[in-house]
Length: 171
Image (cartoon, rainbow, N blue to C red):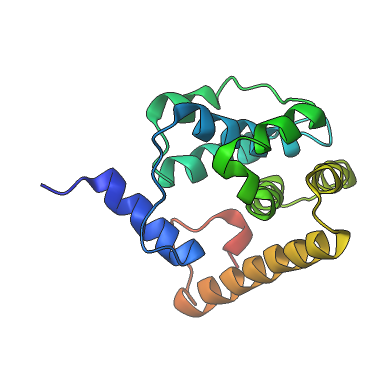
């Protein structure tokens, strides 16, 4: 019998990042740290909207993260920048600074806004992790381009709409 969670995670990693398979998630502390880091970066404006929280929860669920880690997002509190940097220094996460910023920008934009407070948080974390401002700008641009491409794809594939479309894609 096929492990559907692993199949879904492998598919997500292939289509999102070009990985042959999802990385092993053997250390619960590591996956919990990545969730906490992304969640904390999006709190730059002092609030996490329900859509942002839902995006983080859904994203890490599709990545195959353990149920207890995904469920912890419901009550998770943001950490200060210094703690995020310490979390990212852990083992394999030290290679994921750009991914953290990419995920955080996408999560912060899940409610249709990317306010200055969240942008400042991303910039502060990036600087603390040694990621250049040019790279941050390129990641922000990529996120905008991907959202525009999604809107174009939805418009092309569903020219007459669809009952399940999110409000931002309805005409």
